[in-house]
Image (cartoon, rainbow, N blue to C red; front, top):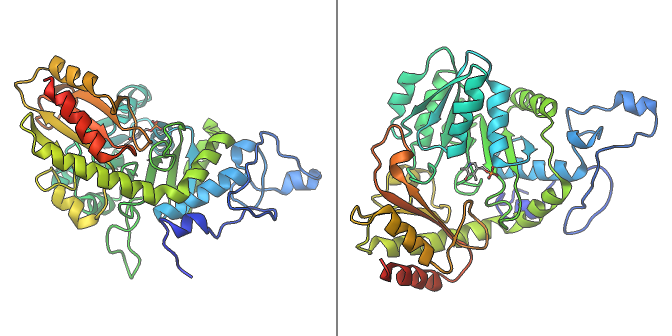
Length: 396
Ligand SMILES: *Cc1c(COP(=O)(O)O)cnc(C)c1O
């Protein structure tokens, strides 16, 4: 029986870890040491697959269970867990890139991913360039023999441009360069990262790697840091897994438990925060204080047509650009007056959050100017959140 992988599949999942026990929630197993019955078992047991257990870092029933659920949520076949979303990006970079190689990163990528390239990767002799994600032809022109990885992100961080993802994937595939998507925004819900283009025969193709900050939607609580690296190719997975092991990227069972507990409501939470985000973004479109509302699902937002071609769903996240007559200090004061929106990074938790950004410091390619405020929707009533924005604007 084929079931909906965003809802039913996260509750009635076919994967059962070794050992017979059943309850609505999977058990939580904690181990550094795994005990072997005898030396023959010690010598025979494999750590590269899920046929047995060897050491806590190589997997427990608890981590295997979450890996399997994330892989099927994303439409992949294998997943690895790491201590944060940023660690997931770092795992991909460090496993696939060597001295002399180059990585291409979208100009609107998650900021710390760019910092990782500027500092750690650069120190290891790995170069990077930032590309305009809204121009697939420009990406094609930038790829050269040293280019060994292309990062993708949809929508982009903070400025929320939605790229033509299938076109970017086609460029990377045609040049034989692996592409990795930061799929935190889509969360495995908004679109299928491994099914973006018609492939040979019937099987569609997509990105080679999808990473997520499980910190965001899959956790949904604002209380866990975790990342995942999902693939659909055994050889690529093994390459990443070997690097994962050698670098010692373990995750704690208590954190895995929190994500497993939250996964059955992932699609409901995504949908609720999407509806709230669109309602509030639409309200902001009618406000004279802002010149632009950046939300991929709103007509007029950069890349709206690209989003529309790929999805009907969006994360509960958007930004507004304040009119140039307001100084950064005035916008900060507006943010400080908000009562329900709390000031803080991250998103997809229960509390609505807000962060002001200075656009002129953020992009190397696009001409963004002014002060932008990013809102992420929690689970408060939308009418209350609108009233909160209204009272804070009244003081501008
Ligand atoms: C939050 C986030 C990350 C990093 O996740 P952490 O778990 O906070 O390290 C990476 N990419 C995107 C798009 C994010 O929003």
